[in-house]
Length: 436
Image 1 (cartoon, rainbow, N blue to C red):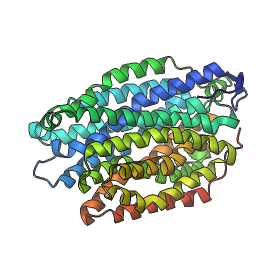
Image 2: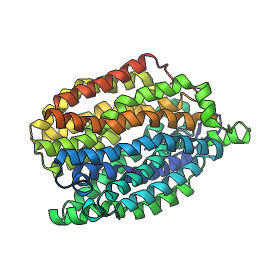
Image 3: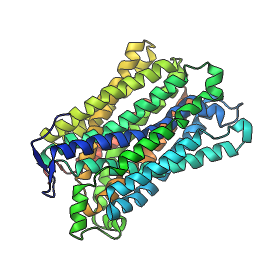
Image 4: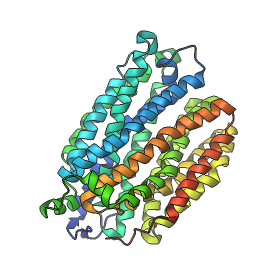
C-alpha cells in the first residue's frame, strides 16, 4: 500500500502520522475480514447444502434452497436493528467499542451454526434455530460495516479519503474469499461426508478467526474524528434520533445508492452459485470463479476509490450502476457457455467492473453525507435498511424467478431494475468529494 506524506490531516485538522494511519488500515481490513468471513460463510452454505439439510427432504431442490435463502434474508431484516444499536454505541462511546461487540456476537452465532442439528434430527426446530443464529449474524453485521469504514475514513486525509476508505472493503472481499476457500476445501471430502459433517468445518473454524479478530479490535486506536468530537463535548446523547431529524434526505440517498451495489453483489456472488447448480456447472468451477472474481475486485475497488478522489464520487458510482444494467444479460450468457474461462470472465466483470466501482466509492461517499457526531448512526441506518430489500431480498427474488420461469432472463431484467433505482438516486445526490 502506498503511503502519504510524513503527516496527514483529517477533516478535524488533527495530524495522523503515516505509520499510525497504515496501522489503522491494516487492523481494520483484518478485523473486517474476520467478521465478514462469518457472514458470507452462511450465504455459501445456503446455496450449496442448507436446502437439503434444514428443510424437508421430499421438497423440490429449488424450494429447499429458497427456504435456506429466506433464512438468509432474515439476517438482513435484523441488520437495521444492529445499525441502530451499534450506531448509538459508536457515536456515543466510540467506534472501537462498537466493533469489538459486533465481532463477539458474530463469532458466537457462526460457531453455533456449525453445531446445529438438521431437519432429519429435530424437525422444524432445525430451521428455527438456523433463523435465530442468522438473526444474531444480521444484528452484528448491521453494526460492522459503518464502524469498519469510519475507522479508516475518519483518519484519512481529505484529498485521499476515497482511496483509503476503499481499503475498508478489502476486509469484505477477504472474508468472502476465505469463506469460499473454506467450502472449497470442505468439498474435497467425499460427497456423503461433506453433506454429513464436512459442511460444519467452515463454521467451526470461525472460532480461531473470532479470537484473532477480537485481539485485533481491542488493540485498534480510536477514530481521531470521534476523539476530537468527544473532547469538545459534541457527541450526541441520542444520535439515531438526531440523524433522523437532521439528515433524512441523506439517509434516503444512502439507501438508494445501496440498491444496485448490494442487490447486484448478492446476485453475482450468492445467486450465481444457485444458477450454476441449476445450469449444470460444477460447483467447484463456480466457487473457484467467485474467489478469482473477488480477488480481482479487491484490487479494482482500490483503483475505483482512487479515481473518485480525482473525478468525484458520483461519476465513478454512475459507472458502476450503468455497467450493472449493461452486463445484466451478458453475465448469464457467459455462464451458459459452460466454458470455464468464460464463466470466470462473467463473474470477474460482474464484480470488479459493476460492483467494484460502486463498493470502492461507497465508503467515502456515504461517510461524507453526515456530520461526525451522528455519522456512525447515519451510515449504519442508510446502509442497513437498504440491505433488507437489496441484499436480503435480491437472491430470494432471483431464486423465485428462476423457480417460476426456469430461465435467467427475468433475473437479468431484475438486475437492470436494481441499477435503474441507483441511477435515479444519483441524480438527486450531491457531490461530496470537496467536503472536508
